[in-house]
Image (spheres, rainbow, N blue to C red):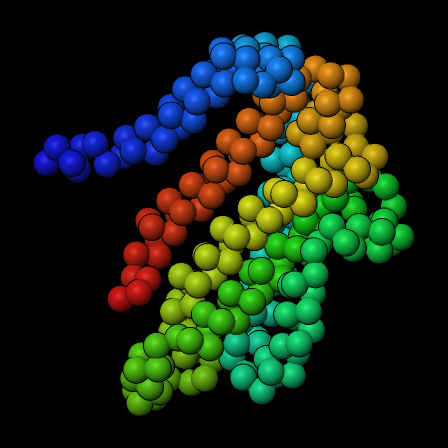
Length: 253
């Protein structure tokens, strides 16, 4: 009983240990306090920046770009993944293309997307959607191909059409693997968006805030933006994990 109560607190224990180690390093001046301010200074800067407005605006801008890129990726990758996963021959025919682009760092195609979309939000969102869609596509196709054969056979024996089997059995069976792709995709989309905000003519966003603070040597603000980026990534993953556990409860059964 006691262990069950303490188990949810274990992640908090790890976070507090990290903050304590950080405070010890800055307190003993093992690292120049100017380059690495203490956690209290960073958290105070975070609160002040959020109250002042600019960091909150940057935070919301990054969330908007990330979620929009994820939505575009879902609309493209999930139907394609189902289509490819439903036909092993078709998947094998395009497997090299999918794996090649999935293995290519999305940041390496920034120049290509700049040619087509120019400097602006369109490029950031397009590159992030490109990276996320490949991850989601691969996982969706894999989930469809590895749907439980016994349930598929049972549906066919009962006279269900191929379309009915696809919609009522295969699609639902593939959802656990699809959600793994979605959680990986949203994390990748966030990384790409923040990197794009740093280097593709951005006027807002957490990436812009991090780079701008670094160039102005506003170190507490820089660490505050980095902390907020990490918290955003953790939060997005936690939200999709909660949705998965709530609605995809049959996974692995």
